[in-house]
Length: 631
Image (cartoon, rainbow, N blue to C red):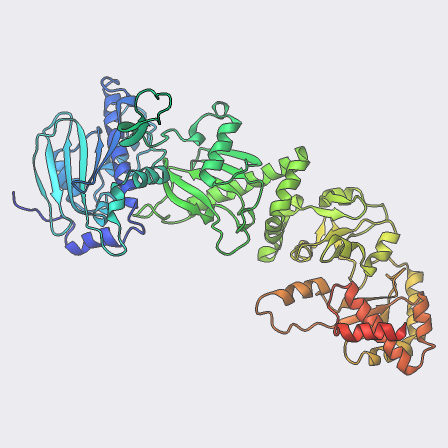
């Protein structure tokens, strides 16, 4: 039998099919199993058209048979099979898909008949050729119900042969003779039971037909005799490798909480059960099913660049991507789960998406579902929500701050901050609802710790007036609130802001008069500090402390510390302002001191204010010596 040339022209095109389209060689098994599944679908559909006579759906199967002795991997199915003409046209013509033609025919049923609900997988007619990535020779034996058997054979080089063969059953058998192992390429792994089982679980676990394989099992041999060790023997057992019916395709009423938990632990490698499970099923322009999990704890590497975010992506039960980042916004990157849709526009290798219109529609809906679930948890199970928030609050806060606050309104009701008055975490809504009638702003203090926030001198007047104070202890907190700007028409005000809006007109006038009286003293103290501060002024916010240090302009000292700590931050300029309490006894004493003593006191007050602001001392040894000297 003379060889026939591939109809899609040259060996160069075949080389592209084999070597350029697919990223991972292991994909070949997914492609061949998907083709087998499609073939069974076609046979089942034909049976339905004839009134459902013949085989039951449970009679169909796909079988893997590895053989190390012959170095072959065989994939067998009892699907529709192929005629001689189909072998030539579908396998001899690169990029011609019999499944695509079948799908198009299904979409246009005969008059009076409805289209069947079937999700065939193949579209491009190139998946079969992926087998040449691992095989040096491929034989395809096939027979249809009303035809004779034939065998198609090719080494993937320059052509193929098709000839009659007495294949005994309806269906198709593909025999791959694997390439020899070479440096960096272990083709023999595709003959090992463990590898084949793992690949089926990874890519084809939810193909609707059983994928079978004979596996070696070590079982007890006979009854154990007393005083003697148990003897074992190796037997071959026919095992179904795939789950077939996905958990997310079963009715919600049929799935138990333990089944969800077990699925989550097994598939996402977490020792803890998830805090919450979200099921989404959508029919429409883009139909899909999603099964999402909100974890209890963050993985150890969650906040590192190497962490892989995203949802598993399936198309009709076949895994396309292990982590599709486009399905989740970064701020919900902690969510685990999967999406299964028959409507995705996949690229020719089915490893990536051709364009993202469908993906954007799915992602937009999922983020709303996740937000709604978190709000529901916050309202109905506060303890559970606080467990979640402790693990993933930074993701939510970064989401508020990121992209110039684009998602701030969407996420603001998920935020929690420690309330100085309530001594617990509160939402922004709860803070506003508990505000005093005369309070016009939401006040907060940012610091390294809760004790630092509560001890800030700048917060003294706020707390003296009985107003609550939100304590911000994460680096991103103040950035997030500044982007948010206000909540329920109440502006956010930092305890360190220039004008807290708490002084009356009379108090402001009195402070201006004191500042005018103390102008010379304040200028002398500024000179004493020799450029360490841009300004020394009187403060109306200090009620107990003698001094505090603030930054000038829109960047607070806490924000300055965060920016300074960033990699490659370099020299970040910061103008400091030293504020003094004119009603404190120490301030009154400053005007009575000699120039030398005043300079020493000014240095002491400045370094003390740095400590209160959470900044390092300029010179700890010199500061210690100064304290001892003044004592």
